[in-house]
Image 1: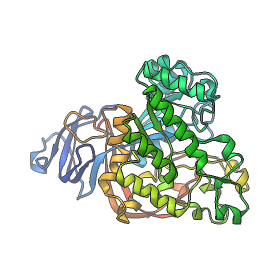
Image 2: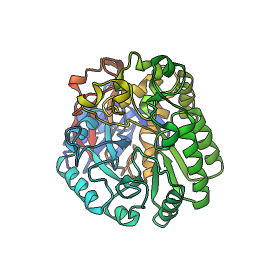
Image 3: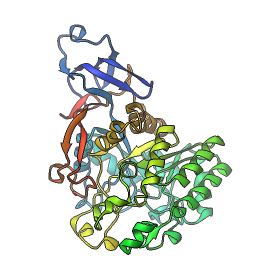
Image 4: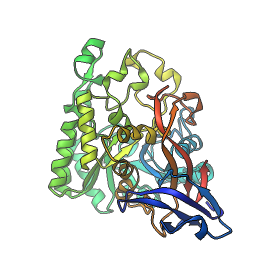
Length: 429
């Protein structure tokens, strides 16, 4: 992308990478940040630059979302690269990592190449493919990690399905070390989870729904930590949803293992009570937990045990959601509400803005080894401007995503993205 030079002035600059914050501005040209800081004012800006007076709004690095479902190829009725990138830009997300659950799965370099070519033609934001860890996502045969990495895959995942076979998982972790590859995994024991559709507990019993215990996640996660200790691999737990899982991650980090973990914005801001009268838009996997667990997860974010916040954007069409709760498909969209929902925690005084943005910008960039996620001279000009106080009501009809299954339907949120730059080019304004 290329765009005329632009200057953002009179802004509240928040840079989670350096943990610095202050008033000032920044200059952008040729896709990179040329200058940043208090010295960038209206008087110092060259005359040929477009000047945007931010009026005290926050200017930060663009968000990096490590877990986004893109239906293309194979499920374009749910989402396309074009529609998901418009949603991302509107939500201040400048980089998306797409899950390998396409049809066919991203288990062949040709599919990686297809996605990257389609992204060049149709995406407004940066699109990074996450390739399949096993062929066809079946969990039996390891995919060609080396070739997929050369083709452009930034990490390897088995999608929503955990690798059941411990020997296969051990071999995959061992093989990944030869390439320094990042293994991303959703931990859930399929046998223990069974036909569960929500969190196991009193509410599930009262609703007459089958529950999924915390242990279904913890058992697989504990197994994986032991395998990481054996192999020395880089490992990222894509979605944690309980304090039990946080304890496992915390011990692994204390032991010096190269592990990190992520959490969906839904598990930080919603709980099982939000399901109410069988609201299928709140059916997600792993399931929403008890309020006590949600508060424990917020503490995990504030303390740094949780590294990354993701939208876990997963569009589902009407036919998949307008059915009884137990029969509905799991998943919710979230790109456009990711930042505003996260700001709920800031407004409640549970985490600082620095902590929230670090988990959405610089920390994902560190894990994926990307140059984005920072406000510094020479860094890619992936930047957003937003007003953290501006209120709005979520109207599904106004969202850019192709499907409208948002768990924040008609919710009152604060935090409006006013400008999104990708490589210095405005993609949302």
